[in-house]
Amino acid sequence: MAAPSVKGFPDFQRFKILAKDDLTSLLDQSPGKKDLVIDGDLMKPLDRIASVSLLKQRGVDKIFKFDGTLKSMHGCEQRVYLVQPRMTTMKAIADHINSDKNINFMRKYSIIFVPRKLHTCLSVLEYEGVMGYVTLHELHLDFVPLDKDILSLELPEFLKSFYLENDQTWIHSVARSLVRLQALTGEIGHVHCIGKGAKMVNDLMNYLMKRDNNSDQDFSRHEIGSLILIDRDVDYVTPLCSQLTYEGLLDETFGIKCGTIEFGPEVTGKQQSAKLLLNSDDAIFEDVRNRHFSNVLGYLSSKAKLLQQDFDKRHGLKSVGDMKDFVANELRRLKEQKSVLANHIGACEQILGKKTKGGFEEYLQAEHSLLEGTSLRENVTYIEELLFKQDNMLKTLKLICLLSLTQDGISPQTYKSLKTQYLQSHGFEQLVTFSNLKSLGIVTEQETGSQASTPLNKVTSGMAAMTRRSTFKTLCKKLSLIPKSEDIDLKTPTDMSYVYSGAYTPLSCKLVEQVITRGGFTGMEEITKCLPGGVHSENHVKRSKGKSARQDRPVSKVVLVYFLGGCTYSEITALRFLGRLKGYVFVIATTAIINSSTMLESVMEKPPI
Image (cartoon, rainbow, N blue to C red; front, side, top):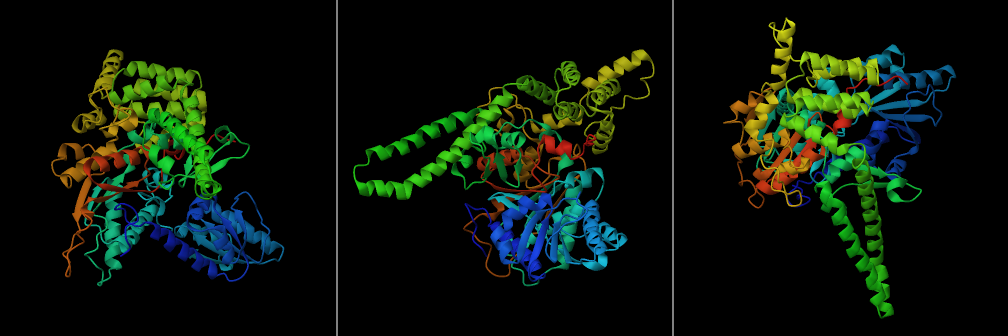
């Protein structure tokens, strides 16, 4: 068994090794010189598992980013496409092949589907008459380790595909990733499912493990004690809230792609941009990533002063030997730290600049009062003002979503008014967006009952709808999601709510806390009946025939929390805090890292170009 990589975390770098080996094996099946055409969405995940030099060693001549608008491509006599299984992509590849056929220039074509080939894609290739010209492969990337405690499938389309389109394609990929994980870390002893998709994943995982069962498997090896699968539709509120931790704000402001961020000249202060890999290897980032933003800039400034003091030590060096030693051992490290620190300070200044203008404080106040269920009339008026000003369409839509989710829908009169104003401000193609959000249960219209037939009854029923107890309010009360104390110490927090300035504790994380505290869902009946999709628990612990399970590391305290449909950096931060508070090691797996904007954009109708 491989040793844990850091402080009790299983060694997830093994996933990178497996993916790299699988990729090189597939490339070797096209011996000789070849061009590699990569799906844009796979560029960054590929960077995490294989270097350009490695690809060159496997015969890759040129690397192209896939462009679906091109009808033809030039290149050498072998071409390998590394793409996600999309029908539009297959049509574009077919166009490339048919273009070559028309000029009697035939290459050897291979398509590597990530993570798997789909029947719909094969149908397109057959319809276009090119199936006989291509060799098909699959590359299961499974998890991309973004950090010691973060695993991502890099499948942002899961949310729209599963929850909106009821497409179960990616359930297989999630289940397979868990089977692959347990092949590396041992069987997970306890499984808890929150939501419909979670139960489906668990059932398929059990089937795949039973089908592929190895009788020689060592059941004494349990690097992960528990698995909690949670559906995103159980908690849409949390990802819609404005993130206030440093890592969360970096994602919302600049966008973090597969653990990498790119800072432009406005941050670097130079003409060129800078790309940073954000993980625990960066000591400065590790120190500030989980902090509330209000405590970041001051900390970085004090760090800069200490760094300058280290630089100034060179003036006190008296001998040539001391100077040589400083240059050889310290100078490079200090320069690297100075560069990284300057980038983080520049990023903070950009974030601060954006938050101090554009009415952010007023927006945050409206958001928090929606979570508390107070000042509803004032909040509706505020949303209408944003629509009148034609403010950012996502910004306004987030508040409409929160209004609906926290009230179990919007009263018919208010719903029609806000919808009409939104369409007038941002285009009538957004009718599709409202339809999608309704199907997801994010923005819905309350049913007021048959008694609301007369004008007077319509008014009274509308008032009642705005003040009734919603499912969210019930969960807030049962789980204490809204802290009673307004005096939350953001510098040395004692509660997960600090990630949202003490205004709200993430529902998803509170559910995880309840499950690990109770060892399941016993005693949570009043809570679980408010959750869509139901809950389910299983015990997979088997008694070992040989020696007892390892005693040097309490694996029962290692918990894998798997989000279906994506999770935010704020939720990851909250779970890290919970782990420190309760003495658990949390590993967060997700289909993708999301934020409020990326979640809504994935289901919005794109405006015409």
